[in-house]
Amino acid sequence: MDSNPRPLRCAVIGAGMAGILSAIKLTEAGLTDFTVYEKADRVGGTWRDNTYPGLSCDVPSHLYSYSFALSPEWSRHFSPGPEIRRYFEKVAEEHGVIQHVRFGDAVIRCTFADGRWVVETAAGHRDHVDVVIAATGVLHHPKHPDIEGIDTFRGAVFHSARWDHQATIDGARLGIIGTGSTAVQIVSAVVDRVAALSLFQRTAQWVMPQENPEYTDQERADLREQPEQLAATYQRLSDMFDLFANAVVDTSSAEIKFIQQACLANLENNVHDPVLRERLRPDYQAACKRLIISPDFYAAIQQPNAELVTDRIRRIEPAGLRTEDGRLHELDVLVLATGFKADSFMRPMDVIGRRGKSLEQAWDPRPEAYLSISIPEFPNFFMLNGPNGPIGNFSLIEVAELQFGYIMQLIERIRSGECRHVSARTAALVEFERAREKASQHTVWVTGCQSWYLDDRGIPAGWPWSFIRFRDEMKQPDPSAYEFA
Ligand code: NAP
Image (cartoon, rainbow, N blue to C red; front, side, top):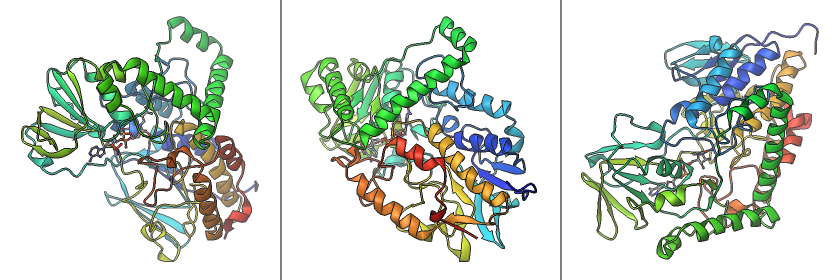
């Protein structure tokens, strides 16, 4: 690096997992002139927004951690959501992130003008920066179902990511629409609390049984005393998830067959009523939709007060939900566990790049970014967990760390004075997308199911290669893929 590096001012958008990471890594690199913009009043992103009962992470806690801030203190193999939120808050506090965060003010526009970015917030604040890092998350815009009469419901109705804690669940007749990872966690957590639970299933899911034992005090003490053991656990889990990542991108792999068999055995052995078993049996390959990880969903849905409803929803009425068979399912509370708009990313924020090109234009008809990080004509604007990167049952923390290491190398080129601006070349993006589309045809995501992984053409909006290849790509940028101005 130049002995007189150019001073750079940066903006990080979002104080969730990836924003906290960015703040820590910028500081480590000596780039301390930055602000993290956060629309809410605390850090934590998805772990702040989601507060539903049963919230947890189905990636093991010792992997779902920053590699530089491993914790020996996790309570369980898959720790509950509030514990994960506290982890992020603690890391942010301990690494001095909080002092950089501007809370309670959303970025509404970023405009590239006169060689820098002008960041504007809802409160009218303006910031001129050299580099923008969009760490705005993937699944954060709730998708509400378009069901007739939803506004007429007399009871409480809310999306899973906007849980209404004023609504009484205990002793209530609870309806849940959806059978994704979220709904399954809610069902297991509340079935013993409610008078009656109706789960409205449109598509059956494969469920991988995975126990979730607590760590003993002794195990925690051992990890506290042996940090090398903690690091080894992280590495072991990371290697294990590499195998999973390899499996889902190769439908003929032995691992994907193992996953299918484990899910099938779970269904056959743990759902006792043959009629219910058939209604819970998916008609597509396991892991085509995001795999559900749950040790107790089948037990929960077989409780006497639980009902799996597979008739299509006709409409919502003041007293409940009416299905196509004409039956009214009377409800007190209705939870919409209907997922997220997965293609929004930092939108509805306006982003205007070089020559007045808007993000809406760049992303018409769909979001694209070279290696999911950089968009042509949007110089010095980088994304973490952007479009078409690794998604699925992995640790997005590991993904973001690898991406940040790569982005930092591009930032260093700007700081060293080697260039003022860097963005991906259009040709590199076109070639990346062509190869990605081709490789997607070998993945399990295209084997005959609908999911949020698929774009408007039915092509998976994800990384279709192995995780090892992702690691390799993230080692260092290929200069020929970038325009250095
Ligand atoms: P999701 O996987 O998108 O599932 C949405 C569910 O709602 C699906 O069952 C869908 O049915 C159903 N649905 C949507 N609109 C409907 C309608 N109009 N009528 C009837 N059913 C409707 O959403 P999610 O469960 O919130 O999970 C989203 C993602 O968040 C996950 O895939 C995962 O990546 C992440 N997540 C992770 C964890 C974790 O532990 N790490 C936990 C929760 C969520 P169809 O299947 O028929 O479309």
